Image 1 (cartoon, rainbow, N blue to C red):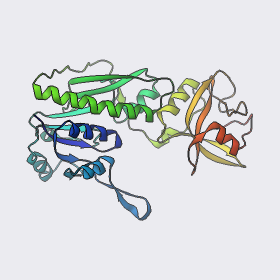
Image 2 (tube, helix red, strand yellow):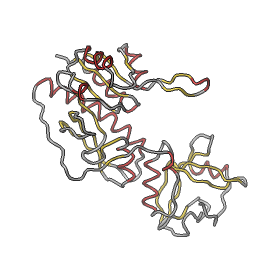
Image 3 (cartoon, one colour):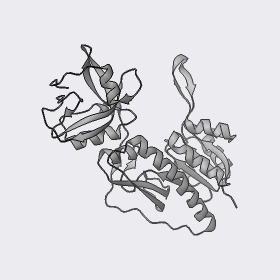
Image 4 (spheres, one colour):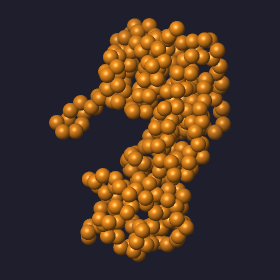
Length: 310
């Protein structure tokens, strides 16, 4: 037996779940993704990763700007789906949409709810220094990530793990858990637990303005910030190179037991002092260049010990 599924997702994170559901034998009756954006040379249309995957697989693709209108709501209901699966879709679903599938709408969310409800749970968990996160499959309701939880998978956050690495791990886990959740729903064995009202935190959307490194913070906090912003948008600072300030992204670093004035370059290995302690970059990217390791960066650039970065 298979379910008639509407899949709703947009970024690369959601692609493994779409693939896993199709491979499990479910009928993907429609795929919804955010509308293509305009960008690049000539302002060409750029389709989302889910949109591209859906076209490759031959699924019907829909890209409404919202679900507020009657035509969009009627079109959604016309699919006569058993269930809608939502993974990082990015549009608010009104109650009429949540109620349309026979079994409702289910979301794969990348945190251990109620911690990190909202748009950027992966980055905020790393930034906060969390030691563990995971994925929860929940039944959707009108509130933001407030629905009862059906299934949970946990993942440790290691000391050097970046947001990009955690993203890939949780993306695959979401697909695996969603397939298991569909099997539970098909069999009628699904159990739901209400979310706790304690420990609620919100993962606000990342803003590019957050990505500049503040050297006055503790080294552990700077390190977490670097990991949370890697690979995108990339935590950055300005380093004088060849006589002019140059924006450099620090995409990976280690904490070093050294001290100095915040922002001070302490040695020829580009160890940089923080408010307490220091960090040493291990992966960097100059503006307009490809990322590389510290050794490669130092071979091509001379840095001045004692210089204080702002």
